Structure formats: structure tokens, C-alpha cells
Length: 242
Image 1 (cartoon, one colour):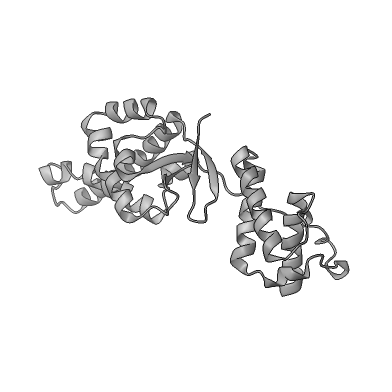
Image 2 (cartoon, rainbow, N blue to C red):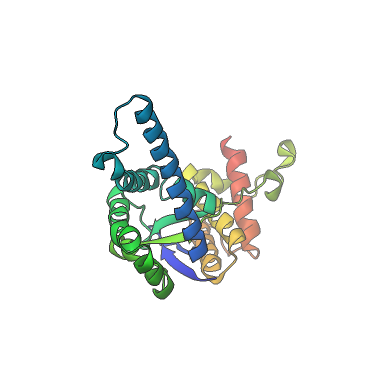
């Protein structure tokens, strides 16, 4: 397995597992099947109405625009995931940590003409196999990469100290009430990423987050158990603000 490290706008370094070639091939095959199904449905619909588009050059060359249009719209609306990518468990992200824009997906789609269609997949396959971040030409020009996508593990209520009996729970850090929803969401996401990928990068993110919270909550000394501390802060926030 190969990983890349992406630093977000909040200066949090996140590790992603790069999508394997077979996963990308599966996603593309599924997307092509979706487009072919729509194309055949349109073909039958036209034949039933005796419009004779089946033999026309316009209809015969409609498949490529349909495929490109599908790729662009599905990745844009799906935030980096077409139906095929969703099933294969992969997603398109930007290497600089920023959210991918429509222009990025448009570039990726346009270069399918070279990577996939124009070379029968030879150029795309070669670049994915040979570049450090497994990028085809469309990824290289758009600054994107395809990674494995796992749903963030949901932290259960029982993972937080005292949450199984709310009426008996006593907050430990009363200053947690000063936090807001975005702060707590950041803590939750950092914990979720650490549990999903307990690597050095996410461990460092946890440590930086604890240092920052120590300052915000005005604690005299750092907590001994950092993960337990973060869970406790979340529990305290939920109790004090609900």
C-alpha cells in the first residue's frame, strides 16, 4: 500500500492510501456500464419513435460526449466520486488539501480524451503505474489524486466517558463550554482519523490538538492520556451545552 500526506488549510497533516490501479479500473468499467445503459436506453427510445437516429452519425458519436459529461457531472456533484468510484471505495482529492473545484473535475474529464479514449487507456495506465502518486495526465494537470475512501468511523456514545449515564455524569473541564461546534467537530474528526489510520502523521495531529486545547482551556499541565482527554472534552461540551 502507498500513502500520500496532505496538509489541510487548518495545518493538519492527513495521510491517505492511494487507490490501487485495479480499483480505478473497476470504477471506470462501472461508469462505462452506466453510460452504456443510458446510451442503449436512448437508442431504444429513439427507435420506438421512428426518428431513425440509430443510423445517423450524430447518434453514433453521442457515446463519447455522454461519457465525458457523465464523468464531469458525477464527480462534481459527488464531490470526487462517480457511481463507479463510490462502489469501488475511491475518491478524487486535491494534493494541496483544498476542496476540489468544478474546474479541477473539468480538467480531469478533458484529459480522458488522451489518457483513456485516445490511447485506449495505455497512457493513463502507464502514468498511474509510473508516477509517485499514481496520477494520470488529468490528475497531473488538475493537481488531484485518487485515494481510497473509507467512511469515517462513528465514535459511539459509549466511547465517551460517562455518556452511558448522562444524569450522573459530572463535567471535568468546565471551560469546554467555551468551544463551539466547529471546534468539537475538529476534535471528533481528528480522533476518527487516528482510529482509522493510527500512523505518525495522525498521532502528531492529536498531539498538536491537545497542546492547542490546553491553551484554550487554560490547563496548568498537559494531560497524561491524550486520547482520553479529547474524548472527555467532547463529553463535557455535550453536557454543558445541551
